[in-house]
Length: 103
Image (cartoon, rainbow, N blue to C red):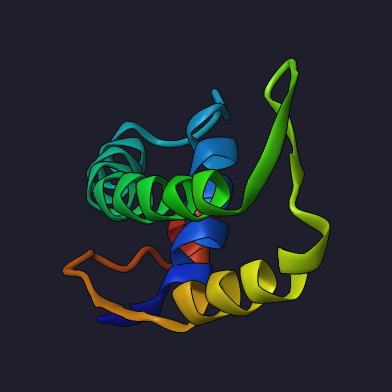
């Protein structure tokens, strides 16, 4: 399956929420865990790349995980992040139907 990096970020968030649900069937939970592992690897790669961009355009560290970007480079930063989010990734994951999630 081909996904964009943006899809990977969105899918990672959704899978995290799904994995926290207690009422999911064990078989579906196992599928979700396997998909999460595959998506998580791509997510981590994309997140590392995004972090490099933050370092590249960082003006100062404000603490608590917050940074200030260089004022004259904000558009360049956004452009590069947009380019990153459009990158395609091929990932082999098993689909889960809505019926399976309903249990």
